[in-house]
Image 1 (cartoon, one colour):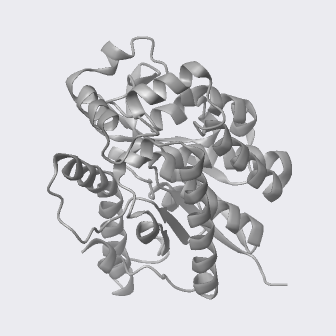
Image 2: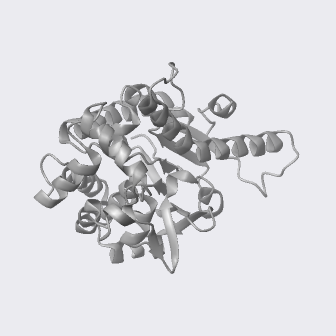
Image 3: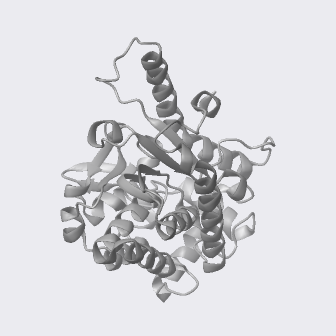
Length: 338
């Protein structure tokens, strides 16, 4: 039997596109050749991370696969939302009319002209109930199967805040997924937080301090490149969102490359600095046809498509990359950010 290898998983956020990550995780868990040392997640990546931990503590890999599947089915607007939740999604997300139709354009305009403190005064978030149904946070805080990190953005300071597994509650995960145009800032210990994607999508640096594993696998769902120039207001905004939510990751990759070059040049000691081996499972080609607005479409046909894309990408990546894990990076860092 093939020896297992350990990796750290870095899970990007991106709304319903996070179902791609579900598919990746489902395949990696089914394959069984990789052990997980730590998981860092942001927004939808944070939800995948805590649901993965919940399932793992219930029944190992099989439990994790089952729990992730249950969670994503539960948040699908087609078969699980209550009437009140469906009305909220339809009004502000327009799940069945995305892709340039009128109601989606109206909701874009609406959220730019008014604040969630005005149109959502009771801070209703339909994802919270599904998260709390799926995850027993008391058990997750005690979970030691692998390390957990969840990133959010501190509204007041503008800095990233990484919460560790032993302190996680539903509020921490909801803070990581808090889009400020749709939801009020999530307060934790008196500090307001927005979506972690603004400052760490996902945060990689916790691995350097908290994990002895050198291999980092980034599951990336926000396309870095597009081959056409956007002209419409909607397309311009979509592209701005993609660039914004990749910005922090690009900065971390640049810093990692800088440190690796110093280590290889003998200017930094490997005894003092980790030399990470970086890999990427990239959803870019598969997800590129879907604009940023579809991140708010939780309909089951779309979610299940993203899941299948993720399984396909996970299989391809593992088949191509497994032999290199533990030996060398398979992501060209300079190419990735330059």
